[in-house]
Image (cartoon, rainbow, N blue to C red):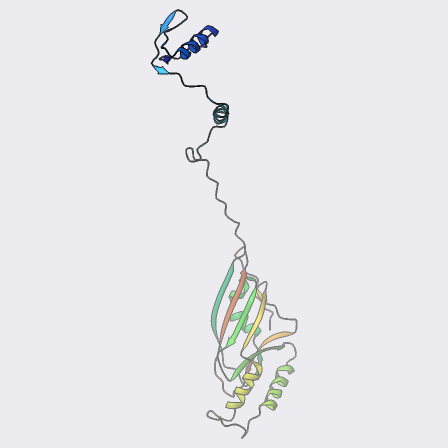
Length: 239
């Protein structure tokens, strides 16, 4: 058996032959390399197979990289640019008493809900919290239209001995009928700070009682406000 104690330089052909002969005889050999005797205490292992050499060569040429040993640069966080914001707003407004009849209140709504001017696009829901008044959209130019509309409602639901419910007078039950016929709410589009009504359209309050008193509206706005935070000019010319 041949043992080794030091790292040798490149062996010569005679050195390899001496090692081979000693291994064949099964005896210990004392080797002299370049005139210096070297004692050996570790056995020389058998030659590695071709497959082992291939694996070792592959491992040396492709070293494993530990992903967790050296932290890489963290990606920089990015924020999306701010755009138009969606907003909800709900507001209660009280209209002053109106006489019995149909009344255009578009300008009054702009005055009582100035928040409309901040919306770029959206919807406005207007709800009247009463059972003897109503809302509708109709002609805003001719003063005769509201009068004719009220006359038509009186013909549809006239006063008289036609009703069981008359707790508050002869105009009580006809007012309930008219309210159901006309409706108690409106859903209107908003565009550039204004109600997107047609040229000849206006919002009507229909007062169906002789003395209805103040009327309460619940206005709900929903949509995108202007991205620059500003408001559109007041709709002063609206009627």
